[in-house]
Length: 337
Image (cartoon, rainbow, N blue to C red; front, side):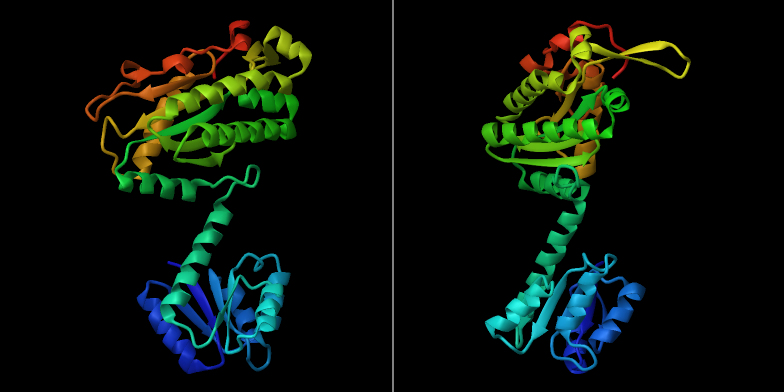
């Protein structure tokens, strides 16, 4: 439940707004001026502020400016409410950091739509991965739910790097981040070029999730693997590229060889079963990804099981890319993935 701080010196308007918003499922708290609103931010932690402009003690413009000054409050969305409709007033409100500006009198349904839009956008921005800028887990789940509800054929794909930790340990986190960003670019480019309908999200670390139309997933997975394998060597030193592995020492003091990074993709579709929720899709795609990681080289593996089947090894296919093994992997006898 989202909490809204309503700041207005007209208590009748504030109470009406609270009543109508609470009927729509929001929790509301009231403040009568800007100073009181600032005091309530730390104690009530609102998800959004409805801020009147003309108020005693501290007006809305000043209050909005103060909200934006503090890091703890800076990301709270603010909608300013005012009886003034002049362009200069709107510009002033936006320049002080307001996310939107609504002129009184307003239609409640319009205000509600603006509140919902801003809360949704804020949640998506907070969910976005800071490294790649791609949508995070909340948006991924919502996109999966939308795909299920649409009842059209789709493929859900879970992509994960192999031997990434060994690379991070050898080259450092900045180099690891560059590999993750490059994979995000490849996924984005291929989906734009090869899929008609698609979505790309970043679960975290070196894990990505994408949805695409059923006709496109094989060529998308194949192309992603091909481009990744073609470019990953540039992220390694020449000596590592030539021998095809990084040599390290495990906790027992024994030498261990970690192959050049490869890519594993697990794929599930709604052609073999009816999905009930995003968690089911995510879990099955993750299961197929783990199965793909048990293969040598960069591969994708597709779940062909029906709802009654259980063993992914008995029903996984990979087409051309599924049998693809990178040259770097063939040159070494690596450890686990």
